[in-house]
Figure 1 (tube, rainbow, N blue to C red):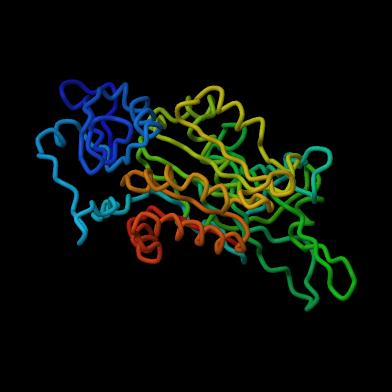
Figure 2: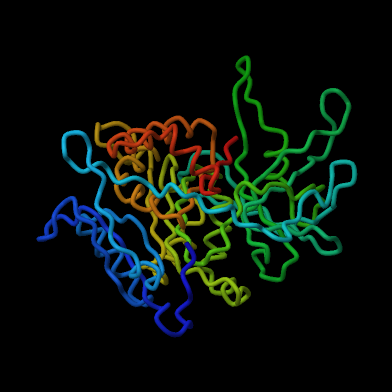
Length: 390
């Protein structure tokens, strides 16, 4: 879906919201109704309809929708209305022009310089997570939100050869944290595990968490087109992140809501819905919390933030609260959004989060008469389901 901007003139400023199951009113449960509203009232009306129990079928340009005749809901064999189906016509994948890929390769990496290396955790947090920013001046290492870069740690591996590259999701926008377009930032958790009773530190994560400002660092890439944001300023973006999987989400949210970024992006003024689901073990482990809270204050109609804090919150069954429990809790709203062609879902974090999310989505889909195993590939083919786990 592409919604014309409010600056447009004439009847194209009117938008149509098509609904089913408008509970709590005189409209029949199986009925299909359309609400035509000015573009300026779209977000508030959409939210009001959701809260009232309506099932949002689609949002479209008012001229197009009002020219059509409402279609009745298909009936099942027992005469009852069949569950509303997601839009089956998948929009063509949006072309991402000028996405840089592999500008620097392992045999000829770019050598950047560390500008800063700061802990992202509050007192009492578990583990070690740092925000590392590197200077890219003097080279041609460009990137866009959702891409990754490779890091080659100093030293040699046990076989006497240079260490292999490790990929990290970029946590900054294309303009960098300083908005000058010459830096890149990473969100790095130090990997630690036990082997034969000995504590082992991850090679590259420890290298990055320990690296001092002023030190050189070998960088490759950028790589990746799977996690790119849609160009549509009216898109809905649902983000599911655990731990340092927040890195690309932080870049998206800065591009959408950071005041400096919005000033740098005259051709991209986000007006859709951004909904972040964040999973961490404890409150002190929440990353970029101050930034996200500032977006909530400035854009309450556009940004929503839902946390799953496993060691502090309980799920409906009394166990630990994980991100899949939050997905199940808000399944109705999530599936109403999925039903819109403009909605994209992004998942990033440990690979172990995938089965839980799949289970929650499958249960939510089944409750609506849908098969998640069929729906997920459709979303993927339409370029609306984006996953990067490790």
